[in-house]
Length: 346
Image (cartoon, one colour):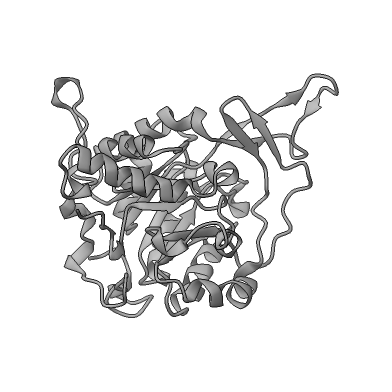
């Protein structure tokens, strides 16, 4: 039985990782589960400098979900490398580093810094951040800005790039296409939805920040639909996420066109969920006589024969230019970062 998949040039031993921001930097969960049984470890977002984050309370439980406004707290590039990279580097599975910035130049500089760090599996671009040079518009909700930040990071690094798209758009289709055209090797779908919860006794928001991001089981059907929409128009792999609590949830995402999945909010109340998803996926495949997990990707049978074209197919998952791993899990793009070989011109 084969569970391995390719995310661009990144090989995962199974299609299950964790969502950025729900798993700390991996070390926090190391006593609770064997991280080496995951497909990859995806860490909390990193920008150039340390960020303190928002005041508390930062989280609030809501019906079938969680509202959070952490504020992208993090140690910055240098702090991450000093405090967390020694632990992550010795894992036998790849680390996907989520990065963000408030300007295109910041994104590119963070990408460049991690391009120089030995052993990184891939970079995930969090584009749900305001661009301070353009009136605060989110990179992920403006196709022009999205294209520019993906292109800048593509030029800055040869590492696999995964663009984490925002759901806060009328249609995810043009954003998925732009990310692919500008050199993204894969997509993560989806980020959280802006939401508000109010304490009716105090008449104040339940979060100190007021507005937060909604995650958890309540958003899963929306996330599955967005994965399906994107998989119908792009040929790069998709990591699906949003409300996954079980192997059954994961299979839904795979059938919709995802090549891999990420467990998020469930990590907070059931830390072993990701491993249970791996085990449950194996059981599902055995029960249905499926020898290779890739047989599930994009196989939803929609009315009228509609469905994902090739976004999650084996061909799409093999990476650009037929790259094959030389590191245990990743091959960098040919050419130095910043040279033609490090751009999307392949």
